[in-house]
Image (cartoon, rainbow, N blue to C red; front, side, top):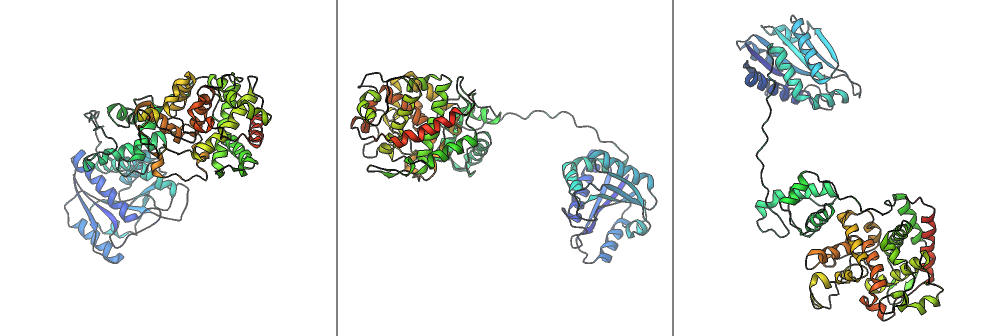
Length: 524
């Protein structure tokens, strides 16, 4: 059997143009059907596209003349219909002069393969192609180019439609494909920041960036460059999945990315994440408070993001205390009387002077501690969550960079974690969310703050490096571990020892309003 199949209209005579272009799609269908006829069904097939005609009459004669020049058993012309722009389904049909049974078969098979409405066979005695071809002929109208419903089905079921046409016009059935053997596993290279074999690793870096965006909302520009942002996103991803955190995308990290490994679940005992509405309300409380407009000694007015960020961080610490989360219970314990370690003892006189009694465990003592945290961040960093090390001191001057490099708004270094197991508890809890922990409140702290690239730099490795990153990218983590250190290692902070931290009544009033807001929220 030999079939000649041509695309309707031509290169310069496009036919109907709607959501799709009739001639362009007809060429696609012809080529796909021919491939099925030739390779899968063993049917001899000849295809034709008119690439020369400039007017309709010449176009019709050119197509028919080509068909009649061939020795064949069947002529087929592929077209697409049009009517008017619509979202309604319109359907498929097949036109004939003498081949009603075949036309019926073709329309029905296309409909079955695609769910296009079967408009059936349509006899036409006025069409040049059907009248002038010398062998049995049909003209297929695959679907309507101006029906969005038809086009969607056509595009989704393109392969199935072409297979259906091939089977219907040949009278043969395609053999179902056998099982595809699994591809041989390809071991991807280990990649990391600063890889110098850029041409080789670039495609793998782009793949990793895409997957980091998909799996961890990393927000990376996919450019194949493994720079600092990709390094940070990698570490955040590793942290959130419980992998070794080293910034290298090795086989373990590739496997996690390729399999869409879910993030670690949040640790037990924490309250649910604040809703977007609650965050907005708490930020509004902070932004409209008196302390938001206060000019701090030697520092001036803080960016609104700092005040809002501290308010949100306190709201979470208070909610943690309400459910008995042990780090928050530690923050809220009464003045210990140990002025060498406990800021509430060291600063008792100044707290008393503004009417903040810390002699009892509970919410008031917790809130007063956070008033102090609000003032301490002003002194340490001018409220900049991205603040890096003290650049007047060489890296590693006081000891290993991982342990002694200060970071974040409160300039806490990792060596402070030995003061309390609760510090490590918070480190583990915030690590679960990687760089996207929703309770880190980075977006709030960022408002009004400008960070340089040098501020984001971290030093050393291991948990100390992670601590520096988390202090900057998860500012609420930095605030909470500062709260633990203030209760157990207050000498860690120079402004505390010099009593430079302002303890503001207006800060207490703002946080009290936040506390009252939280009290009206469900805690579960």
